[in-house]
Image (cartoon, rainbow, N blue to C red; front, side, top):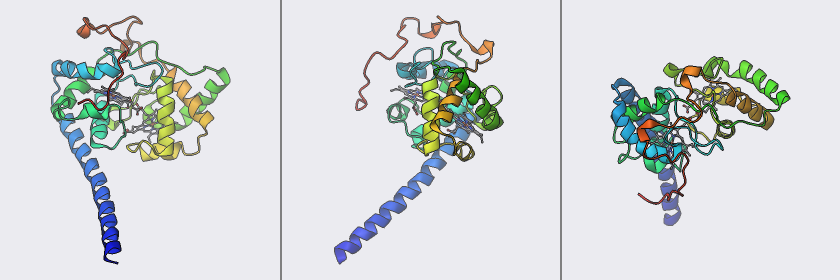
Length: 251
Ligand code: HEC
Ligand code: HEC
């Protein structure tokens, strides 16, 4: 009997602890975002920090067209800050990147502000990964986008820095499609609740069509790089796709 009582108490305690840690991690992220936004960024230091990020996101910040790694260049600094704070506080699952968001690499809010400023100024890829491009599906995707997404992500998927709405135009199709599925399924825990509701009734076909449409919206030309542009900050290191298998257990 005593044993069962003990078990019950431990279970209850465990539940309370995990609930309080969810609240705590949201508070941690909120505080870090506010801090980082209030600081004056130093993009020179951001460049140094980016040495680590480019292992996966490439020196250009373009990620991979197959969508495993998203393009992050050209993203609003506020959005980058929020995503970094959420990932490291555990509000958005990203097991691949999580080990690189600890205090050894992202020391404090200043470091986060620095790297976000650097990345937001990198030009975007003119050759992002796209979907199948079937014209009926694209027309369907366009209709869905204009009805359901422009309120927050803008007419052309340019997002809104002051409201933390991500720029989604010109992002890799496979990444968009994955995020849309995860947001709908509730797997992306930091998702915007109104957006989750908005796409609640979307079918897989709808998600695919809208992702293909968004991947084909061209960012403004001043945001785009020449197709063969290489980031001159990392000239010696022209590796532009992750060629090494990263050992996640390695510190
Ligand atoms: C080991 C690989 C790896 C490293 C190193 C890495 N990332 Fe990532 N990053 C990823 C993956 C994978 C995702 C997408 C996860 C998903 O699909 O949800 C991602 C997502 C992101 C996002 C969210 C993008 C979006 O559109 O929401 C940002 C911002 C980001 N990374 C910035 C950084 C920064 C800054 C660094 C360096 C401090 C970094 N990453 C280092 C793998 C990595
Ligand atoms: C009520 C506002 C709102 C609406 C409507 C909305 N979104 Fe979002 N969306 C957001 C916010 C906010 C985020 C970022 C959530 C976070 O991580 O903080 C987001 C994230 C995303 C992402 C992930 C971006 C990334 O870089 O990881 C995609 C893709 C996306 N939205 C596409 C869409 C599409 C397509 C529609 C229409 C079908 C849509 N959204 C409707 C607010 C909205």
